[in-house]
Image (cartoon, rainbow, N blue to C red; front, side, top):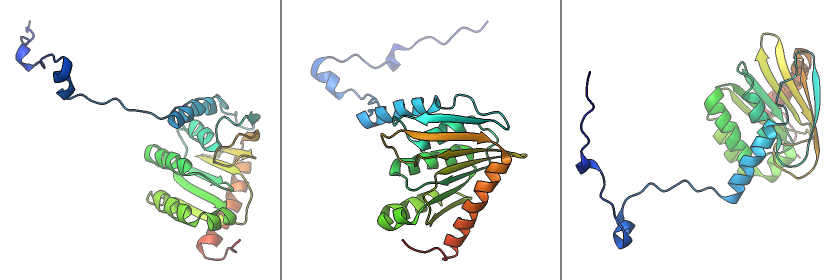
Length: 212
């Protein structure tokens, strides 16, 4: 039976007290700000909105109470969808934090992403939008476009004739309003919404979309 190697006290750091302790190298703990902690709590609440996915052919109605945003619900739902191949989002607007969250999702899931926003938002947030487009399209299979739209829809392509769709009053960015969200597990509805989203994205990429 092998004996463990003897402990060498020479390798242990010497204790330091008083002024000497100020010069001991330590690993600083990661500090979180109050907004970070609030966002983390909101993410936990978002995960509770749909703790279980709708069954095929089922529709679930829910109410968001202004304590989290739609992007957090999308992230929590994506974790429950191992077969997710394409995520399509139509929204009036988004926030910088939403872009970071979508980028984090792309890092872990490697799925395609289509993001459609309103022309109004693009024209009134040009610098932010251009920066966001550059950040997201650095990933493969990502399209970002704008159109004259006020729709808030999320399509989760699950492959093999399966799809999940969110129809909601909520945009990606946070607000304190009550928002409705309907989740439907039906491929036909998924494909119907995906078709008009893809059409508007194609028009914008071809330079045919009107400006606000």
